[in-house]
Image (tube, rainbow, N blue to C red; front, side):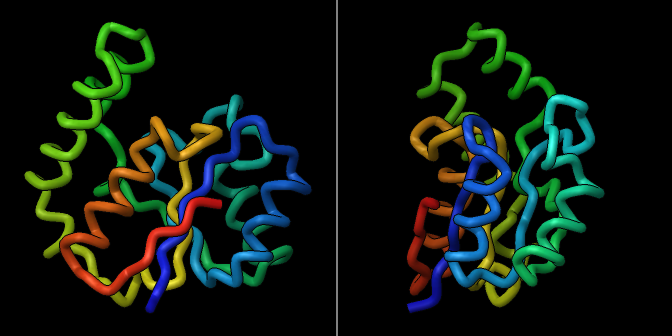
Length: 145
């Protein structure tokens, strides 16, 4: 069964993060963050991440904004004015409304890693996106790194 992986970079050293990516055997890193150039991203700023993914892991990199939350949604969740359950439902409505399962190609996500900042997948949109795509496309195993 083809796999789609997820990973967050927060609370991981560069060695841990790139070790997990390399160990997964994945071939593509798909950045699902809304903002991937923030100084707070450290070694995962867009240009650095593209370089490190290629050089350290042999992976291609792309930024996929169709899987990113909206500014409004992300701001409300980060400010804690929106509980996780409400955020999760709103995020799923957002990507459903974007018709991501029709506008994205399943073959571009097989053996790919969805990236965001949250340290674990439990409360993260990358998990929701991966599970949504797996359900819509079928025959795709979700693995959290």
